[in-house]
Amino acid sequence: MKLRLALLSLITTFLLMIAPVVAATDVKEETERAQNAAAVLDEIMKTPDKGIPKELLLNSHAIAVIPHVVKGAFGVGGRFGKGLIAARTSTGTWGTPAFVDLSGGSFGFQIGVSATDLVLVFTDKGGLKGLLSGKLKFGVDAAAAAGPVGRTAEASTDVKLKSAIYSYSRSKGLFAGVSLDGAVMSIDDSANHKVYGIGVTGTDILVTGKVKASGTAEPFRASLSRHAARLKK
View 1: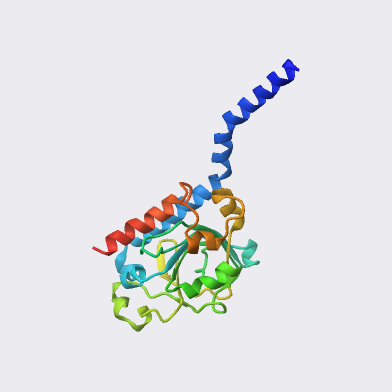
View 2: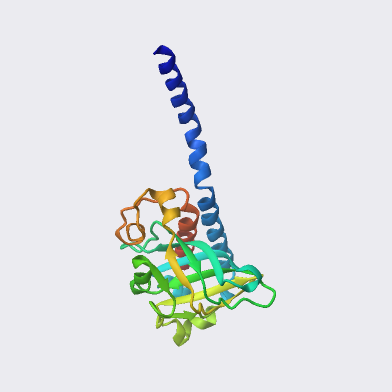
């Protein structure tokens, strides 16, 4: 009996010792995803003359970044990528990010380019309805358009929030608006459950504010907040 209790105590101690390591390993992929999304946003914001118009960013309801979207094998099987999306809270600050998947469609890849970064700017709450109910098919569940680029586009009619979603791509350093023909975005429940807990939904994260921010996704939220503060100056 004493031997059994001693063995049980030893096993418990071992599990407690390795728990932090296991937890860190479990969210390694999600941590890298958040860091990559933040890096993409930072790079785009470094070139305001060739980036997303200031007016559009200041009036955005949500922003999604999907780094390194890749083609299927030999150009077959569509496109696939994983990223994050964050929405503004009732106070206008950026809330807790949710993890999302993107698949299908043609993202306007240049010849010879096998990967691209995508940025999606949502202009109102309606653009998120399809995503929160299951899947958001661009052009079907919400109007989507290639986004205008640069400061000169701020005065154009395209930036007057006529579309629910504006989309952009960056390939080999080149940044431009892009049409997401047939692309589908969905909530990545698997990643969200790992980071925020079992049973957490996209609505819990993006709408109700029930989910507290996590250090795993903080790089992306911090990047959004930092650039929002700079744009208001």
